[in-house]
Length: 257
Image (tube, helix red, strand yellow):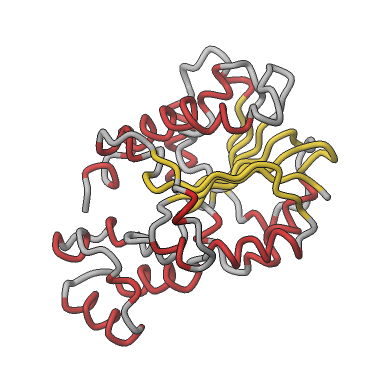
């Protein structure tokens, strides 16, 4: 397992850097991020994605299922000069019927690929979005080299093996078990993995419009992780279905239709 998956403070810093450098400029193609813009992140973890928005004076709210991560967020933000503008909630999003406001921006960064029932999820979160608000979504398509999140595995061979998650389920299970991995966790990731085409279908059925889209051959997050400059997917490789195998991340900005 890579150090970043154990060192949550390092992971927080990586999230903060990528959001400040790449996510906010992407959102600002459609919506300026000013102090009066409210931000909701679902699956916020320790809140690394929210810090750049709070730094700009935006009121931010983060929701996550993990009590430990929410507790860590509270500690990491305790000394922030705008701490009173940050709210952290430990709860299943489906149990949240309403919040104290609707939001200008909803963040779903590396989250949708972990959520069961994505067809239900996207229409559900609309209740938290202002009529003129936007939803930022970033995720790794399931069929990309490490779309199975095998990089979180402790076994060095498994964690560095591209496309192993695409093996037939029974064979994949045996490989994970032989390597001493958490089979249930990895199969849950497999069960919720999402392709680009399925995402587009969910967006359309959920009555959203895609206002901005960018597919990356080299994920923006790889800059701080590996020192690799982000590279968008060349047009000649943007082939439906096949692009899932070499797109490491997609950025999307959605609005109400």
